[in-house]
Amino acid sequence: MDLSVVTTNNHKNLGNNPYPGRGIIIGCSPDAKNFIQVYWIMGRSENSRNRIFINEKGIIKTKPYDDSKVKDPSLIIYNVMKSLNSTHIVTNGDQTDTIYAEIQNGHPFEKSLDTRTFEPDEPNFTPRISGITSLDSKYAYQLSILKTIQNDPEYGIKQFFSYEKGIPGYGHCIHTYKNDGNPLPAFEGEPYLVELYNDIDATAHAYWNMLNTENKISLVVKCIDKESGNVTIKIINKHS
Image (tube, rainbow, N blue to C red; front, side):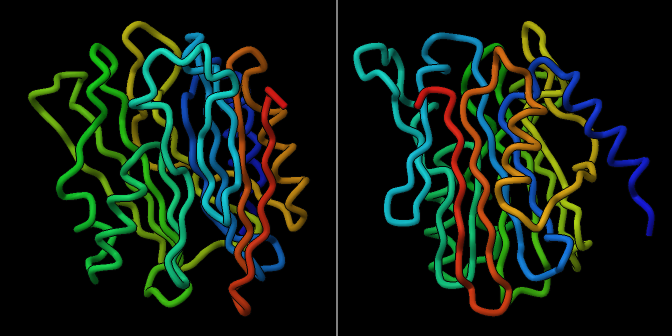
């Protein structure tokens, strides 16, 4: 399967997008030995840009870079990545903890988001995007987006995308916004294919360098060994 043309175009579109917002990529390394999760955040306001990622005992979290500049932490401070046994969760908000709790209670990914919806940040109503990888699931990975229909908060939609098998060297990418705007237009369509690499640094720097220089804030890559379950994490913060 030759996906080089498709991914080249998708990389170009992502690189030319000034504001895709927060993004998730999940897929497989080219050698098929690892599942890979990528997550990034961007920001236009001082409050949104005042963040870094930290690794606290395997849980990836957002944290203020400068505590004195924090205005509203409600939608910008949350657990980004969390794992439960062989299940690895990544989201753009506090639904990380909702999914974790529901899976702990034996509920599937889709069911875990029944009680959640898009973010209450009028006029954008930012979509909640989430992903999951489980080493003992019938799916290689799953992605979801909870958003409005045409930016009307009276009408919500929940979309789930389940991938039965990962494609070595590729992942599926979803992000909160289609592009920049006021209000910000929500992501449309299915997650799209992008390229991944065996080396965690190569993956991290490929997407960090691809994102808009002014608006990118932080990025994390998580590699999960399919056989051992061992995890490797790479974080890049604009504020270091």
